[in-house]
Each structure stands twice: as C-alpha cells, then as structure tokens.
Image (cartoon, rainbow, N blue to C red; front, side, top):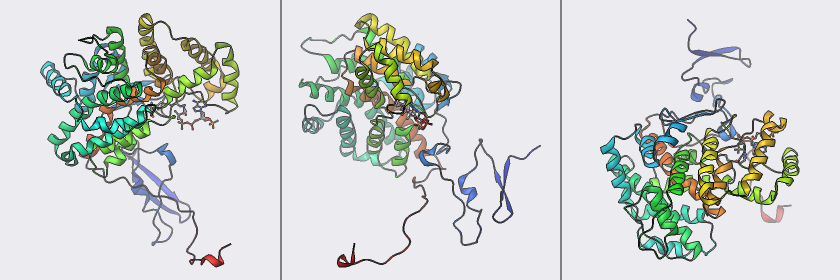
Length: 429
Ligand code: SDX
C-alpha cells in the first residue's frame, strides 16, 4: 500500500526527504527542513495571490470549479435558493445545520430585534457628501460599530460572539438603507419588525408617506434569493481579508470593515457595478462584436466573466438569470439584458473565452436585476456585502476556534539592497 507521503530529492545536496500528504496537501512548514547549509532558513513556497495555497481547513462551503458545484454545509445552492429563506441559510452557514422551527423562530426574533442603529451613527453618515459612494459609508459605519460595542473585543467568548453576530446580520440592511436614503436626501426609515428580512430592507429603502410599507412580494423574494446566492464563497478575497484581520484577535466589526473594503474592489464584489458601466458603455447590441474584439486585444476586461475557481459556468449565475425573468415580469425587461445576452452568446462560443475558461460569474446578471429593481449602480456592491456578512462571520468564528490558526504573517522573498551606509545630503546624487 503506497504511503501517504511525498519523497523530495534536493538535487543541490542529493538528500531525500519524506513529507506527509494530508487532504491532498503538504504542510509548507515541512519544507523548512530542506537546506543546503545547516544555517539556511530552509525552503519556503512562493505563491503570490495564493493561487495554490490552502490557508485553512473549513467545513462551511464547498466549490468544485470544474464541475460548477457550490454547496453550503453540503446543501446544493440551487436547492437552497429554491426552498430556503436567506435567514435560514444564514443560520445554516453559521451553525452548520438547517434550523428547526424553534431555532428559526429564535434566530429570526434575535435578528429582528437588533436592526436599530445607535442614533450617533446618523451623525457619522451626515458627515459624508450627498454623492458619497455607499460602500464608503457602509465600510465606515461597520468599523464605527466597534466603538459602540467594546465588549466585542472578547472574541474568545462564545456568548459575546453570538451577540455581535445578531447585531451585524441585523444591522447591515439598516446601514445600507440609511446610506441609500442619505444619498437621496431622504429621511431615514426605521426598521419594521413585522416584515421579513428582505421586506424590512425594502421598507427602509423605499417607504415614503404611507403609514405601513408593503413590500412587493416578487422583489422581496428576488432579494431573498440573491442574498442566499451571495452568503458565502469559501476563501475569496473578502473572506481572506476577514480571516487575516481576524487572526490578530481584533473585534468582528473591525475585521468585517476590512472584508467589506476588499469586496469593494472592481475585481471582486465591485464587479457587478462595473458590469453595468460596461453594458452602458457598449450601449447597443450592434456594438458588442467591437467590444469583444477589444477584450481579446486585452484593452478591456469582460466584467462579470471569469473566476479564480469556476472554470465552468458559475452555478449562481444560472439561478440569477432565472430570477431575472421573475423580476422583469414586475419591473419590465431591463434593456441592458439584450446586450448582456448577446455578450454571453458570443463569449460562450468564441475560442478566446472558451480557451481561457471564461464564463459568466455571479456578478454578470445580478447588476441587471438590481438596476431593474431601481437600485443605483453604485449600490450594487452594498447589496453583495449585506448577505456576505453571514459568510464572513461564519468564517471568522471558524478561524477563532481553529487550533491550527495563529496571527497571519506571510514570509517574503527579499530582493532588495544589501547593507549600505547612510549617505549625507551633500553627497547624494
Ligand atoms: C467575485 O473568489 C470568489 O469566490 C469571488 C466571488 C465571491 O463570491 O466572493 O465569486 C465574487 O468576485 C466574482 C468575480 C467578479 N469579478 C469580475 O467579474 C471581474 C472580471 N473578472 C476578472 O478580473 C477575473 O476573471 C477574476 C479576477 C475574477 C479572476 O482572475 P484570475 O483567476 O486571477 O485570472 P487572471 O486574471 O489571471 O486571468 C487569467 C486569464 C488572463 O489572460 P492571459 O494573460 O492568461 O492571456 O484570463 C483572462 C486574463 O487576461 N481573463 C479575462 C477575464 N478574466 C480573466 N479576460 C477578459 N475578461 C475577463 N473578465
């Protein structure tokens, strides 16, 4: 029976080393024994952007990029999108099992009763210009919340962690809605505890003079599905930031502000905003071939396409496309859809995209739905951050409880200057 090891021969010395293979990985630390001279530091791996490095062990989300599979705690994403609510999925992602009736009632009660923001946060929001990007406001207010809940620093206390989890999941729709109302110059709308999680979010966004806001059920359901699809996605850039910052044992508000900042990037959660800008720039179906040519010349990225892990169709994109049809029955078809469908049609048959394994990802169609629902383009990444809060927190709890984990501190390959003496000003060139 072959042993579960790797034999490494260092041709510089002729020495051989046996390193154990566990979970299809070797421990990078096991390479440090490989030296030419005893005083050497020993071998490291060099892996910019962690293209081939596992940073942790996790039981939350499973992705098979080649097969286009995505499961939360073993449940396929299409089943969850069809049969669960976002709050059920947030519970599953955080605690590992679908909640029973009593657990869901308790979870819903606690999330519902933490939706208010401290009144002082409104002054922080007022400090932003009317046209401030809502992600800047979102990131700032999330960070500021750590000053309102200093006990959150006790990250090793499960009861304290639990309270901050209720608070963050409950408050992110309020933060998002307040930032939206601020940019519109409208008064803030307070949470309505009678409504569902997405329904209350729509209430805080859109309620005007009516005594009781009644969410459109199609939009309410579409948001719930979109929230489910964005809940977690294993070790993406934002989650990596959550874990790296969380590894210093800082409070979850500060860690999540960093995760949201990473998500804001145009290559990550900001891509849905970039997709709409790209479709607007293309302007008409007849301009699609010319745009595709510019992408192939590497003058442009096809935003909403490609993925570090999925080398097949992102399973979330398929579900979003189906959800779009439901929304468009209520809102009317978004004219951008025609351009998006033509981009997809050409890209899926064009050898450049096929050879680069570029398929639509979660961001390609989500923006079109959000725009049809009336959200401004710059609000799209905020709509990503709201549901991803449950994934960030689940990954953070896993990190805090993982005995394998320590403060994240990568090594480097130093290629800079050797030691040299200080040069007085009058001798500098
Ligand atoms: C999300 O990681 C996650 O899980 C993220 C996410 C989540 O749920 O958290 O799924 C959410 O961020 C989805 C991705 C949204 N981003 C975009 O849609 C932006 C456009 N996509 C690209 O920037 C890119 O595809 C990335 C960033 C998503 C992935 O990039 P990689 O894995 O680093 O691949 P790469 O940039 O090295 O590209 C490999 C090749 C290159 O060509 P060559 O130099 O090899 O010839 O593919 C090309 C790239 O030029 N390429 C693209 C392209 N994406 C990659 N060419 C044109 N258009 C694109 N979109």
